[in-house]
Image (tube, rainbow, N blue to C red):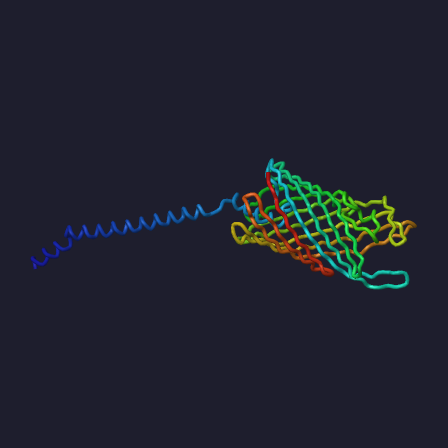
Length: 340
């Protein structure tokens, strides 16, 4: 019995066995240290890949530049942005015509090509002003052989954009916009509507709006509300089918836009939007005390656009719009900005 106890005691407290247990424990500790190091390296890589808030805002602005640079983005402080835009619009509709003793229907076609140069300057990082001047070409054709066209300057525009604070948390990026339009184009109230075409609205107008955008990974949601007011004018002497137009009191208009944009890659993005405008009735006063009030008007459209980033400061924008109210109409647009 004594011999068995001595042998058991020797096995239990063997130095070789203790060294083996310690070695096994050290190996496990080293394995844990290696796993912890791998986790740290993985976390470091994730932190490096994770974009900062400033980088996220820059990416958001690049995407929204393809939507509408003047409405959703601002020019940086002491920078000048020059944007060239080219737009084409087409519309066709039926209209009743009066020819002495006969009334007949005729299908009309309207084509318009607009070249526009816009310049914006950043007073502060959250405050910028802009100026735009368009050049228009319009072509009008009836269902018969009659057609006419015009090439002239359009209505100049002035704008200001202000972003009071940066977005944080659930709050979207909010910008306030103001605009003014100068009637520098050919006024529709100072031409012969039977033989000539206009290139402007003929009235002074001002507008105000608010635009919002919010990244909701992986998309950017955006929207805007706008209000436009045209000033009355009373120095007309236009002859409209035997009536002398003397004064115009145009109605204001309200509009909104909703859409989403998505970055397909580092260089390309796509955007979808819906816009709606409601115009209130206008009143036309003619010589002899006769007045005519128009009905309220609405317009709506769906747009698809894309942005191609060709350099860190230049994103080419392409878009197509389809009218959802009224007869056939659609539009195409192209713009490219240059920042100095």
